[in-house]
Image 1 (cartoon, rainbow, N blue to C red):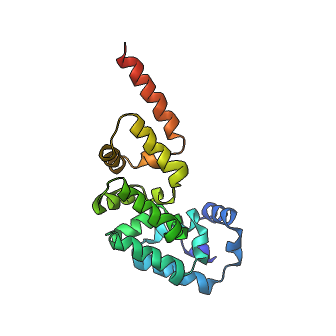
Image 2 (cartoon, rainbow, N blue to C red; image 1 turned 45 degrees about the vertical axis):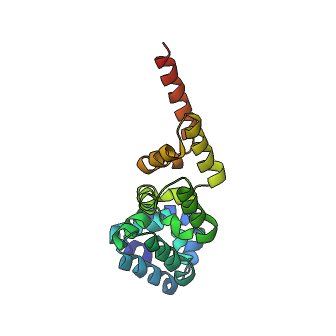
Image 3 (cartoon, rainbow, N blue to C red; image 1 turned 60 degrees about the horizontal axis):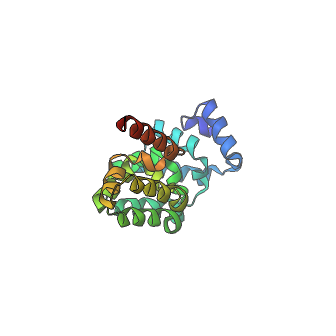
Length: 189
C-alpha cells in the first residue's frame, strides 16, 4: 500500500519488485526518510514514483553514506538543486554508483579530454548516465574512433559536449562506422 501511496501504479510496483525483490522486506521507517529527502531536493511526486520504478535499490541506500555525498558532489560540480532533481529523475542509478571508483574518474576523464568545468557540467546534465559508463570498455573506444575519423582532442571534446549520447549509446560505434563508410563511398563517387 505504501508504494501506491507514493503514486506507483500496479505495473510500476511489479517492475520495481522484479528488479529488486528485497523491496518487499524493506522497513517503512527506513524508506520514508529517503522519499522525503528526494522531495526536499525538488523531485516532484510523479517523478518519485518513476525514480523508484527505475532504481528501487535506492530505498536501501544510506542517506548519510551514499545519497547525500553524491548529491553534494554533484553540487560541487556547479549543478544547482533544480538540476540535481532533474538529473536524479532522469538517471537515479547515479545514487548507487561509487563516487571514487566511477563518477570522479569519469569527470577527470572528461577534463583530460580538454573539457572545462562548464562543459563537464553541461555534458552531465544532458546525459547523466555517462557517469555510469565504463571508461575502458565504452568511452575510450568511442573517443579513439572519433580520433580515427581525423578529429583532434578539442574537436572530440566539443563533439561530446554537443552530442553526449554518442558516448552512452550501446552499439553506436558500429552504426557510426557504417554511416561513415556510406558517406565515404558517396563522396568518392
